[in-house]
Length: 257
Image (cartoon, rainbow, N blue to C red; front, side, top):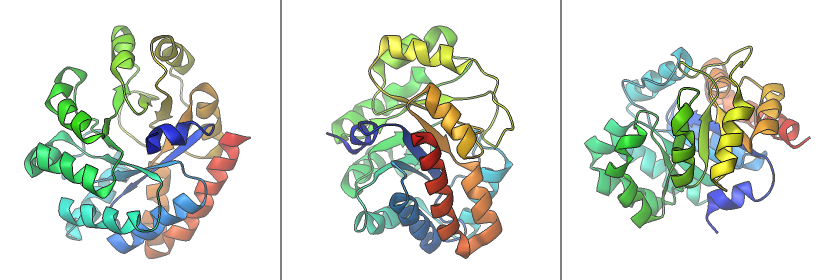
């Protein structure tokens, strides 16, 4: 069984996100290990990019800090090799199609397989263009994660039928960032997904803390949180990992309640 499948086999799933190299790669590694030790089921590792179009100001800032600190895709690959020596948690890369293209898609996805990356999340890759990466991902056993957004409507069933790993349900229109309230009809979206596939789905974008995460996990199979974690990093810097561990524990406790 793949690590992603395994994660969803044990109840509601918490998927935290972190931008690699913000404020530095040593802190990223410590934070990932804290998340793994405190109940995270899958960790999304952001490979920094200069134009992260899906991100709000918080994660954009993290990308800029990481890039100005000299983080490259190769350095992120090396970071994953180090993380893999200490944990078997499911890991997904979250980045942009351009990062994969400019590295060379075949080389990038082969390296994902070699270092133990389980999934690839590309928020700017339209469903219609996924064939550019899908055969490579399939050949390497890396799940290309599909997105379902509030605007997907008629395409939800089609996307769901072909999805692998898990489906990333975008909670609201716009960019990532914490929201005080999520008003999208998520139960309706999730019911269409479940009518068309057994592939689990997790809700992300705009979830700010344990209470909201529990609500979203109640609707779906799990919750994804990014900006709230990046805020801790922004505020605490190198002292952030322990606090990220505490935050992870609080979220996981809430969604399992």
